[in-house]
Image (tube, rainbow, N blue to C red; front, top):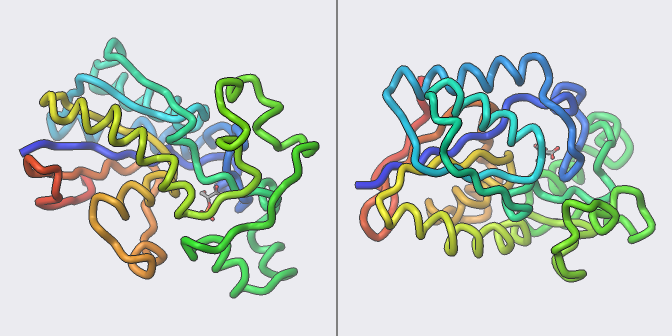
Length: 229
Ligand SMILES: O=C(O)[C@@H](CO)OP(=O)(O)O
């Protein structure tokens, strides 16, 4: 049996302000910093240590991972960062307040943008300051990989190659793995591991800063999963 730990970053400043975030590199809120530390304390309390960690290129996730690893005295382990674990790219919604957007476009439309795996938020154009092609950290990405908008299915399509190539490889080598990422990149991963339908995943919300443990069999099928308390 293999154990895998998934961790959504602590609350960010824009989570707190109820703004669509996506690839915007916002920091943790004060509460988020505390949640990240608490996640590490829970891991420590339950005796978790790790051999390798994976995270995104966004500071809310990197800092949460760092804080959790510090608690379990594992700051020394290798950490692999990838844009493929980034939050879903929320297109032209990034930066907008969710309640104001619902008042403008209707609750139903906003719910679809947020939770329908096949609904595409409005796209940005390449001259938009939010275009990742303007950000040096994404310089290795091809034009096709640079998103203008993304739905959950597309997020899953770019998370899975990373899962299969790196995370699965390390789990199969019996390494103890922690993946610290985002609400939607983790929802995509959970949909894949748990074989959830689109409807099931649309009702799934992963809380911030709470370690989610997966016990997996040799074929990496889920035996059970639970949050640490
Ligand atoms: O704003 C975002 O990027 C995400 C995660 O906080 O929001 P949502 O819950 O709408 O997917």
